[in-house]
Image 1 (tube, rainbow, N blue to C red):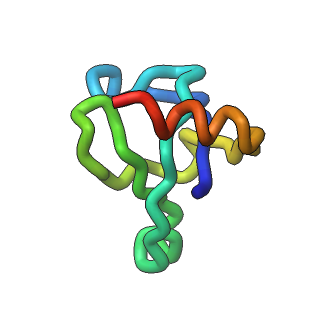
Image 2 (cartoon, rainbow, N blue to C red; image 1 turned 90 degrees about the vertical axis):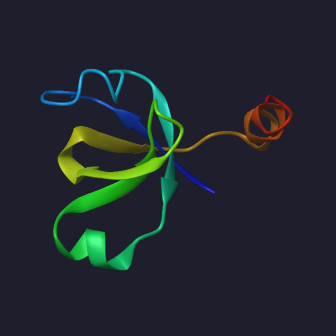
Length: 70
């Protein structure tokens, strides 16, 4: 699993929260257009500009703990 942190939510304030970590969904086509696919505040996956996010590495303990939520 890969995760990113939102660093900009301009034009998407209802869908993205700055400083929040989002799960990245691999999407080769989106990447070609400088976009990434993440599961946003709606709970669905959508495309957003790649420069709105930075990669983040989470420890295995955090990933395991978050898997038990929901």
